[in-house]
Length: 362
Ligand code: PEP
Ligand code: MG
Image (cartoon, rainbow, N blue to C red):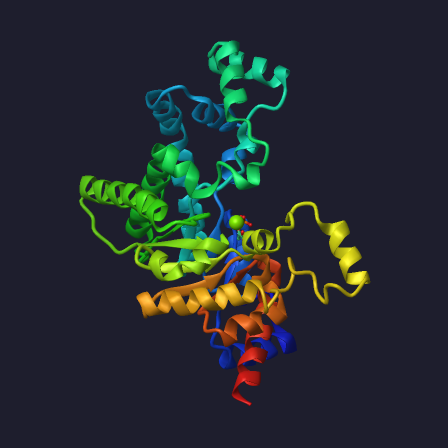
């Protein structure tokens, strides 16, 4: 890759000859995707779709979608959002060429999409022409005391399947266009987040499959696609044999898995972690480096259970730990096929993966 030339480039080339772990990246826009490819990324392991919904011209429609009173209203807002999503995914596919891309269905803590003040509700009311009282009531109804344990991930798609339908349509339409325009053999990987139960995965998967099949038939095309899930709730790891019946791949979301296994908030525990490190209670920050005896044990168990049900299941990690050398060694040893990390950690991940392979051979 152009960014890594000279002696450093040579070392990286040696690393690539030795490592068996693939290195993917977490990217949700073409610029980051290209940057990661320049650093040697071999695919996208996690394309989060939340940020896309925060673009200024989309926010009113997004709020209308979330605060809608009926499916019909929601569908109206979603049909406005569909072309934007299609172009988001086209941009990502184009940036990645024929490398694999895993796109995750919407996974926001819902409160991020809600208006926060009375003023915002008033503004929105004028903007989208919906009475203030109606919006205020709905905002109140959707309020949660603990959004990170609430209406997130696949739960959103269970209650509002239309959102998953719109995203699945955009993912497939974008693939169809890029296949036609660029002759690339794109096989979309659709990832369902925050799954804890086989039945909720099956529910959302059915929505996605129906949509994909309908779109392919309408467009007169047929090509492969994969549907998989994040493993990021302890229950999903514990029941990974059941979950694998519905999933062609697992991607370990170790940010949430660490949060839920430790019962420490991933968003505001910096102070406690420093305290624990100073007192020698933690050797490492578990949000940076996989806690191998706790969280790691869940990951390892899920790998074994997943493989027992589906021997050729694809396995990767996309939590922050995917860019941490110690964690990468662990991922190599338990038999993951790829790690996915932020673009700037890709070179380190390539080296760490090579080091892990050398160590394991000794
Ligand atoms: C995770 O939980 O590890 C993950 C990758 O998802 P997010 O950080 O978007 O919750
Ligand atoms: Mg997560």
